Image (cartoon, rainbow, N blue to C red; front, side, top):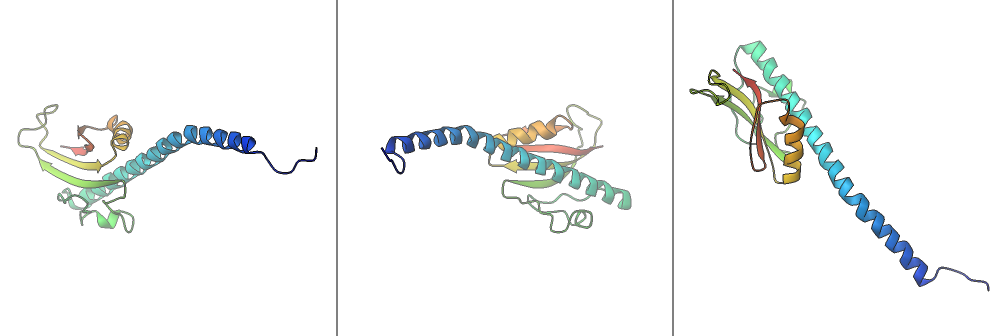
Length: 152
């Protein structure tokens, strides 16, 4: 028997196998994508921290607080060109808080320079918290986390 082409059953089996492989791969792809975004957040955090320290070294004061999504003008010279506090997956807010009563963990502190990171993706928020939370003082409410840059 001289046969050409594939039968419907063979085609169906191949499509089922491809579908199963896709079901295995897609969740892993999504998690890897979120890990990459969290790494970007970590890089942004470090760039902002270095820029804030550079400004403090040159001016003996810390940059003023800015609104959500707004890069403090004092940091612009020390950040990469076109640096934005608004990203597709998250936004940032530079904080400069005076603390008359200190912090619960350190009543002697009088100032907190921090970066607030907000995202709409709760899984991304958890990954960011795992990536940055172990190394710095932080506060979290929902999908918003504030990470200390400097505690004085």
